[in-house]
Amino acid sequence: MSTVALITARGLFGQRRVLILLPLPLLLIGLAAICRAYDVPADQWGAAVIIGLGFAVVLPVVSLIVGTGVLGSEVDDGTLVHILTKPLARRDIILAKYLVAAVASAVTAAVPLFVAGVLADGATFGTALAVAAVVGAFAYSALFVLLSLLTRRPVLLGLVYILVWEGLLGRFLSGTRVLSIEQYVITIADRIAPTTILPTQVGIGTAIVMSAVFVVVCTVVAINRLGSFSLAGETS
Amino acid sequence: MSDTGVIHDIGYQRYEGVRLGRGASFLALYIHGLRAAFGFGRSAKAKIFPWLVAGIMLLVAVILAAVRSQLDQVIFTYVEYDDQMSWLVIFFVAILAPELLSRDIRSGTLPLYFSRPLRAADYVGAKFAAMVTAVWLLLGVPQLIMFLGAAFTTKTGASGVWNEFLDLAPGWGYSLLWALLFSSIGLLVASLTGKRAFAAGGIVAVFLITTPVVGVLSILTSTTANHLAGLASPMTLIAGVGNWISGGDSEMSMPIGRFGPVYAIEAVCLIAACLLLLLARYRKVAAL
Image (cartoon, rainbow over all chains, first blue to last red; front, side, top):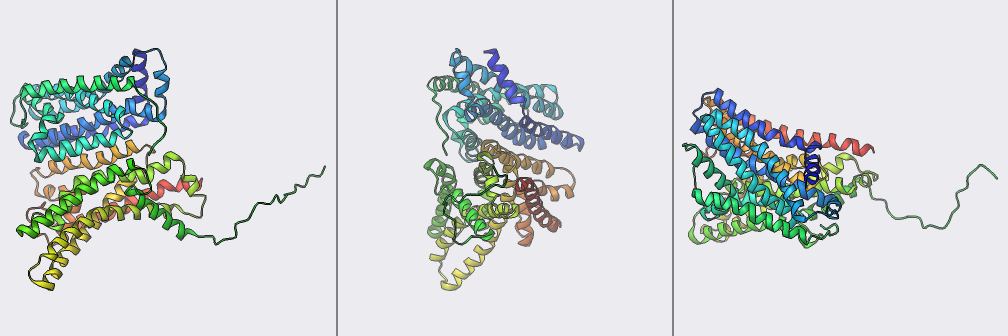
């Protein structure tokens, strides 16, 4: 299991494309620093930077790239068959890959959010944002790892979830917020360190329970799905 | 044993038909690209995503036309329709640009293309033209539906239809601006990677991360920064250009102050820069 995790981590960080994970967090910190330098009140820029960029873009997009990368690229390249033929339980393969993806996205998203939170309102708020980002990274990664097993176009489907479900429908229809990881993350962050910056739309109980449900259900379905995985030929 | 080689005629048939030149290959690539945009000639799976987007856009247009004709209310003007649908346009670009460029890189068809009398400029031009047409159709056809809904229920006869058309024409122009800018940026990102998934993610990331920058710049204390904020994101850049051309009378859209020309210059430069970078990108493949 640790070997699978090691190979996955090397596949993730050993390539040039890991560099595209850098600009997003840097931009987040940079914008927060600019606002701080110009003495703009935190409750004015907080929503735009922390929610608009941090929770709505950096966290899901990083999780999407990493989460679909750990399994999806192996499915695409056909190297997955080498791992599947080893005497390993499929559960262990999924868990190892999921943990690598979740930890990688959690670090990439939580560090800049912590810095932005410190710049906005102090260390408590920063810690709250970081904790919420870690929870979010685990939930998003579970969803996107599952997607990369369910479809051959996981990134597009993941983008539909981020753009249309959370972005477009979340603004107009209040019902979709119950199934939106972004809202759980915001709620958890606000409950740890209450400020006027973050607007909460769902209850804290819903947020925690639903995050756990996302993690558990998606992982179980992914294990189940890999158990009966068949390597299909190239399709459209 | 002689050293001079002999080429034996083993009876292959020679091609004696007309040899079509660059123009024909340009046209073929253009038509192929446009068909691929909406999944024609591909499997049913390839049609899902483009038609999902197109279906939503058409549905919204039909609803708008129905409301217009029955209740005589204008919810979105033609220009506002483009702005409201921006997320779907981004998604469409993220589907389409990798489909047009990354596929060729991935499957290694580029050396085959460039072994024909096709230049890099032709290839880029044909793909760009196909994509602009596709995005423009995506926006223009729903606008036409809205126009028809309004035109058939007008109460002032031919002059009413003509007035409505005068509203539609700038809307079409605005859609063309969207198509030009989004296609050039999307194609540039897609030409960098052979993996469609990464190209799609990259395109969406480019459009999404620039939006909060605008949000931050527009709440800074300097009015100049507020007026220049829209330059940071393609979507607000287009809105700013539209605002400037229409005379800046729409107070609901973003304030641009007296910097309208700056917006127009940046839009033109951005399109030109993306196309030049695309040409530079394909120069090396063309030399292979």
